[in-house]
Length: 254
Image (cartoon, rainbow, N blue to C red; front, side):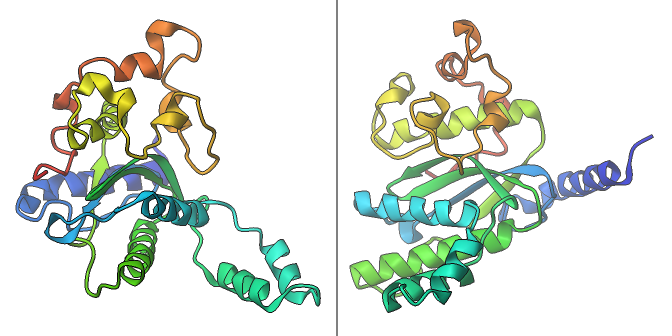
């Protein structure tokens, strides 16, 4: 007999599927979220403008992700505020860190790709916090960007788009799509996916870098770590089967 939680999840998924046909023109603009589910999230610059102009911009965006998704050391921050040895500047920094929203354990970032005029995130929502997480991230980065480049107004084209990943097949193929997608912007053939110059989580997936706040095991647990023919690297090198993810790639207007 199904437990009540599973019934609730399945019911919410059925509701989402029933509304797909009603969202063709503004697909993924209606935010109906399911806890413990995966989502493909996407946004781009207004009027297709670049939102990352140099290495610092990429680094700042990633630093915001790290801050939001890493466990906050509240004991250390509280002690820094209370200590007479802490400088006013350090106390101000600690106070801001304490006040900053945190989504550790609420949202898992599974993989990402940042390109000059847009970004892709694959996340798992553990609590219904994607909306506040994305609003916080987008607002904070837009404020940084406008301040740095002396501009005003909106930075992103619209409210971010998000689409529910409904099957394990979609989940795996979507991760590959996100990692290979930057070849297009870099004017490279898909086979040159290792040569893409833009930041992505691919380095973590190939075990060349360890980043605690990227939860790659949601994908890598499906693959062998030792058998060369069954690794994620082997999987990503196969020609992608777009049939699995045709309705969840989002960025059809690129």
